[in-house]
Amino acid sequence: MQIITLFNNKGGVSKTTTTFNIAWKLAQNGKRILMVDADPQCNLTELVMNALQSQPTTPTRSEAQNNIYAALDPVYNARPKQLESVDCTQVKGQENLFLLPGHPGFAEYENTLSVAHQLSETLGPVRNVPGSLHHLIKITAENYNIDYVFIDVSPSLGALNQNIVTTANRLIVPLSPDLFCGQAIDTLSRTLPKWIRWAERASQLDILQDADYPFPSPTLTFNGHIIQRYKLRNGSPTRAFQTFFDDLKSRIDTKLIPNFTASGLIKTTSMNAEDYLLAEIPDFNTLIAASQQTGKPVFTLSQEETGQTGSAWENTKLKIEEFDALFESLAQRAIQ
Image (cartoon, rainbow, N blue to C red; front, top):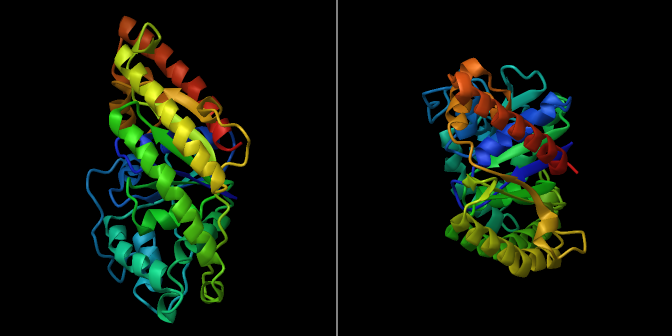
């Protein structure tokens, strides 16, 4: 079982949509996939359940442990109960795809986890906190005989994401060609090596190894990046977007790859951003609305679901076929 996280501290890069589409494609190809919604905004959960209302922010006694917040409650609220596998949601229309639902209340654990990260070496009562989320995901994945876990996270540099990213096996960075994603690359280049150094130290602490849920040694590897959400003209990015494409490549070449290599996140010898480019995904345009309404990936949409007819449908059909081929390739590269 491998854990893959799509992470960028810049929002609006189609992280959730891409996670959903990759996971569905792998499940379609016979892999058993678990998606974990670790973003308190719960966009992935809403997409899968096609829900218009949020869950309550506080679990009741009768509420089953069917979301990430309730499942971690015994650890974060010091209750005398062991963590148990979550009763996951099977995604409609795809028997190999499951969701560990999110919850807005998950954000409440940020402060507790931050304290545990800093004080677990000297404060015994919080020793079970740092390794608990990884343990929960692991036992849930084992219960469902999962091949790959995909974790959807928020665009944050807080303790929750630090914990999730450093206990994953693979990292994919989704980007969009704009000024702020360039700045985010600079931030990730500085921050992730620090996170890995912290995880290496934490995994060697006796108190965390003797905990009920030991904190694992980091095995994170940078799989690559995805560039998406841009407009095409005559089959290529417009001139304005191309300028940002070039800027992203330059920052990846000069900052992200050298820093990731030095910290052990990159195992290969290539220093060229092109070698880590997993896919370029242009804007879905109107297809994204149909995908969200149906709870299905863009490459499975039918004519009826798009609401189009005639030449409009013929053009859209070609786009759907292109996205199908694109995500087929991306899904395979994501797990290589």
